[in-house]
Image 1: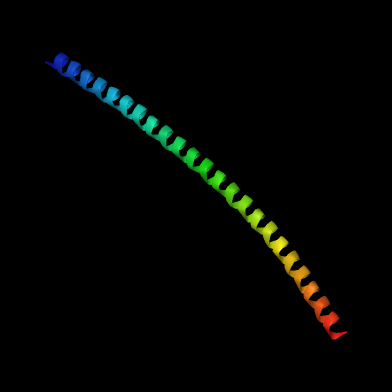
Image 2: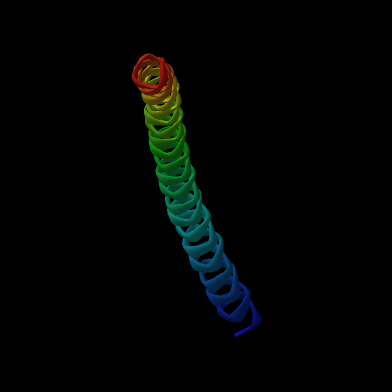
Length: 86
């Protein structure tokens, strides 16, 4: 009958709505999980960039000290050479 057809269509529509709601919830959870993973990756990248920057600064300081020692060594060598000439 027409009534039973309408009732069946209504039940089918209800199932579709429920499935869509479940799908939307699942999609929302997947999206939220991906967003959390992205945030964690961004935090890891920032932490690693800071470590790289700190190491780079430490290297620059060491190279500055090495340069200063090389200049002192050159000065001492030139002084010894002058003393030998005199």
